[in-house]
Length: 318
Image (cartoon, rainbow, N blue to C red):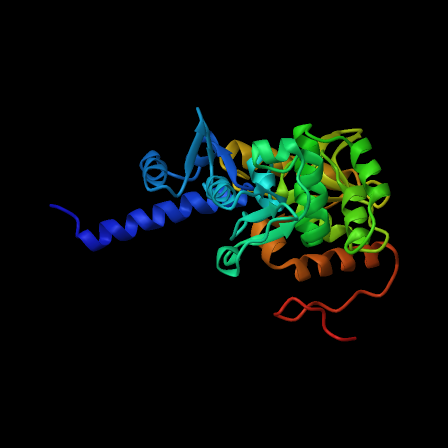
């Protein structure tokens, strides 16, 4: 018997939403195997056919945001920049941009009607940027550091380092040369950038940790104690505090569950305290995550424990 048309349409929509959600949580791109861990082959094929997901290359899928932003740049004789350029460069981001980010030459003015629905910046563009229609690597990182919230900008800078498209020395030189509005935060982003962060999830968790006084988190730290060898996502080596960003694939099989349980137990026996965070909490309940870190650090340092946050994520008044 044929399924009701309404139900078929609804299922198709939900499948595409699932594919988009998985890609968004991976910073805008994922491999076939990563997607197939959470989607049926039929759902993935339909998402591509409907235009919700684009197949970039064999086994590699991305959100179609970059295509949209390139079209907007071409239409307006501009260059894709900021967060949109980060996606064009293939870097992972916290959130794909809801609207295109474009940089337009200073001597060209777009009418208000053309600017509607766009993030437009007026600045000089190099011949290379005009020719390729996208800002160069270093400029993209610095633009994001100047304009985006700290955690979003850190995701971009971490990803650019991880991809090998910029170096720490280049970021240091750029930080020293910055002047004007936004420079203090941008210098902070560039100084904190670390290519060892595996993905935007870890970058955002580290961004929260950077707000906690005295907490010094190192990405992908290797613990090598007697009876315990493990790599943790983030670690404060002095306090022996480890943070884990628990992604989609965590505990996908019984063997993985058993392996991780042994790993956590071994870390505890070696004197490590382990805190585990989900993607949803890091991205949507950052106030609560910050409180948990403040509370643990206060306990380890012999200080009063802060009050837990209210439902809106803000800490209660003392």
